[in-house]
Length: 301
Image (cartoon, rainbow, N blue to C red; front, side):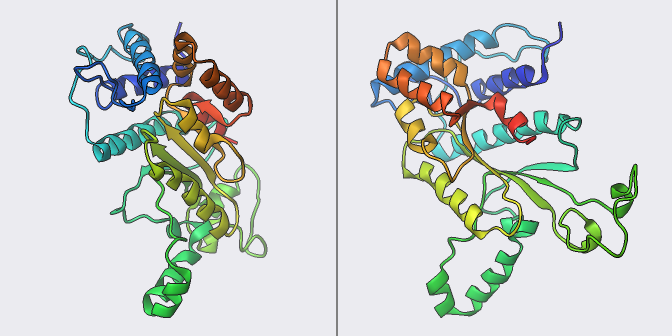
């Protein structure tokens, strides 16, 4: 029986991580664990062992990618973060774009960086930020008052192209020259592409940098004109308390997605940490923590 798309791509996503940044060192400490935290190490090891065992089983996605013991030198923080962003971007591209029957559109999924030529001001909801940026560059006093906190650089974005009138008028005539002259989706109005989702990808949450995701989310909320894009975070962090520090509460991010939630829950249960297990149960039942396989369908909303 052919495997479902989201199951297939989830397996592929994990194999890619096992062959890049998800490894164990000579002491048996997984690369996403906090070596000074016994619970973090135990949970991360449980997740790693489950994913490694699964990766050795052939499935219908493709021929198995070899994972040779999975012992490598841990990648440097910035390298791990960049690779995780890339793999999250590839996972979304391999799943969400194949759901045209659920969420039709001309979609693009990109990994951004500090050197990227694409900024949030390149999209319809935030194009006014480019004008504001030019004003602050030309006026030091204004820059001192406003700062630059309004500028956001997401790790991964999903955006959609606009529609020509010929496309909008199939199978029935929807627009003409007299109405809908400000609609963002209509290319004839001269607007910019529409930002559909901002994805913050954090391999671990070992410092206050993980809270940057919350700051970025609040900036996207406050500074938009028009529809708010999906604002989500994807992480490989194994420690339930650190997951809760970002997932608890509402009003900023839509949801926190774990790269291997099912394996995380099993690892915590096996370890016997009742407090951690109850905390995860609260997050999951409260719809604040989901598995990465939930993300593509949530983006279809």
